[in-house]
Image (cartoon, rainbow over all chains, first blue to last red; front, side):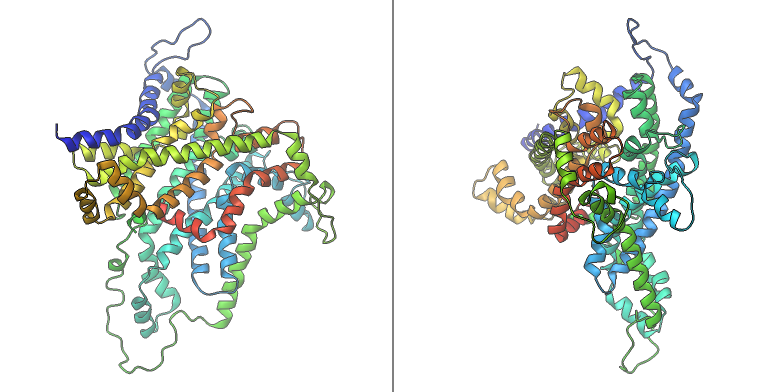
Length: 289
Length: 305
């Protein structure tokens, strides 16, 4: 073997070994585990074929979690991306107190999700919390935001949007600052309206950033469940159970590792599909190398 | 700096055709700035932007209010309400937060140092050495960008249980040490460093490791700072994996400690819980407020967390 090849492998190996041990290896064992039963007491784990998948298919909580997760993604993603764009447009132009405003938008990003969850849990408290307090000024009554099936998931969505929008804003801000000034001058010469300039020039220029932000928003929608653990534990009646939360609950509260593995495989399949979409469709537009 | 390639570059070409028509006027008469809106519209926009800003910062201000006032003022706003640090004192005494702070500090330090040490040589090899299968291995590494360790908590827990590391600080760190993100980010930066500098160092008799250390690492300093800030804030705030893998006071990081504290015997004393919440977020928040520009630029440079 060439000397350079040996050197390269020696340099890569420590990082690669750890990476494979904690990404590819668990992915493989999880897949294998999903075809075995959970070991319980004196009954060791044994091969069950696709029984776990059949069980999952018949598990209403799984479908509920999948449904919740899709609703959650379809609400948090457009909301946080749109707000991020608005924020970026707002602080891209001169206005009084701009640095302060930018900070206001971005600060939630720096807080741990768990801290965010604690703060918002207080807001959602019936009677005592901020929301009921404000509503009572307008004659509203008591409402158990986290205890009501209809409001619990929207409450979680609000938390995620509040935390993410400011983070995505900075990417839009960076892109807006690269809009070439000669385009602005040309538009000014033509007497183009601001709305027209935004729609015809700025927005198309922001497309690659939008795609990039979308990918991140999608990943977040399937990855972040810290607030669920703290605020609702998936309740009431599984109304806020997301896929990763269901994995956590199945694996580490019910200790049914086989079902947790099966669920993980499903989540991995979803992420793989999204990755394929990212590299296939978006990859051509977003520059990676 | 090419580390930001995640934020897509070829912007200039995309607007082609939009501004290409010849301007109708030939004279150089003063043009109103293109963006000038009617003053009334602009005022409305500014008000809107600030309303959104206030809405965004309100939860945090409210938390600060609750934490620094006696419980009786938690939901009552009164300019004359007495300020107090009592809530912080109570929170600090009610749970071993000093230990949690120590645990998180140890964790963040281990992760940061190990990531730098492990990712630098790998990034160099991917950026500057050629060997069979390089692109395949790189693709294998990049897979981790989509499949983050928290998704694999069942499998990783099993691995760590088998090697007897459950409930240790090193176990919290391990899945994150071989970081595809770090390798990718540093590789992008290393590729922009002029090959001539590397060649010069080689001619002077520098070994491979010396070249990495003397040429590449110093020139990639901004990327290390960016990656460092992103990594520290990620692991300071990380929750689900530490929750699963730790089980005692001596290993729990702040986030898990805070959740244990907030869900157990505190009842609903929001003043104390909020004080504890702010206390645990404070170091990062204060650092951010002091080095705002640095943080924002780092997040931008790093592209993804």
